[in-house]
Image 1 (cartoon, rainbow, N blue to C red):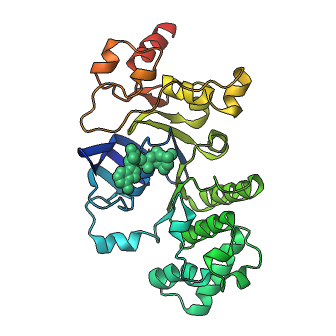
Image 2 (tube, helix red, strand yellow; image 1 turned 120 degrees about the vertical axis):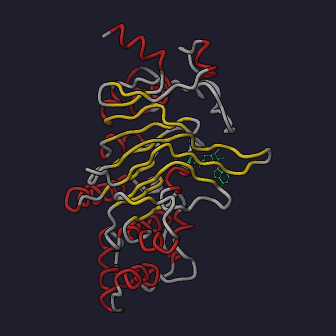
Image 3 (cartoon, protein in one colour; image 1 turned 90 degrees about the vertical axis):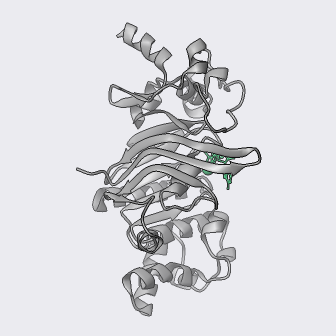
Length: 325
Ligand SMILES: Nc1ncnc2c1ncn2[C@@H]1O[C@H](COP(=O)(O)OP(=O)(O)OP(=O)(O)O)[C@@H](O)[C@H]1O
Ligand SMILES: [Mg+2]
């Protein structure tokens, strides 16, 4: 069976002040139908760039290498016109900043009905009815009345929910959601997560979800993938990754979090900062901050290898785990 979305050796290079910079480095992953795939990692680790590469919405002059297949179709090489029919229709997107996903000059009704009219040729009144339903699903009060209002007339959290409604309005097969619930208070956040879970179960929606909130991840994500310095360092069933992290970076990330670290006795920040992205970086990006690092960590780039039902890019820890086993 083909996966809903498959990225293979995805590499993204952007122009930098001193030449090209590799911000995503040979990232390989798959998202199945009906699966919530969580992506986490420190700020600047390449999560947003990975997500933007799927619908090919990277900043100008970015270069994508490798493969991204959606329902078996190659998105990297798909002609722009065909991609336009996939974007918004088969792949819905919620961006990190809701202000960029809602056109400020258009009333919410126009924003929500445009994709319905474009992709399905729906008539005006049917599209408005569907738009009102979509607002109701994300718990916007007075859905009909809200269609006439402009984005700035809503609070930030409401704008984010409208952006989510807009991403889901064509009932896409894949939702790409970059920090979709960060701006929402917990009760509204729970409502949005329930909606996604229902769509996942009922219609097989796949979700690429980026969030810093590992609490959210453990409640909704089936798979959790951790990025560091543009590379995947660990991936596996969310519960396993959270309960039994294998990569030292994942361990550090969990220890620094109130929900998980707190119980283990106090929060422990990881000393140092993430690596600056460069082209052709060798060695493990985490080595300078890692208490387990040995010489080879600085000279050899660790491969992501299968361990149990997950993948880990840390030969040092793996050796030790093998000995323990
Ligand atoms: N528009 C851009 N042009 C050039 N480089 C960019 C651009 N946006 C991001 N980058 C660089 O790409 C790298 C990865 O950034 P990205 O936005 O993917 O990180 P992130 O993991 O989403 O972080 P955050 O958690 O802060 O959202 C960073 O080094 C960043 O400086
Ligand atoms: Mg981001």
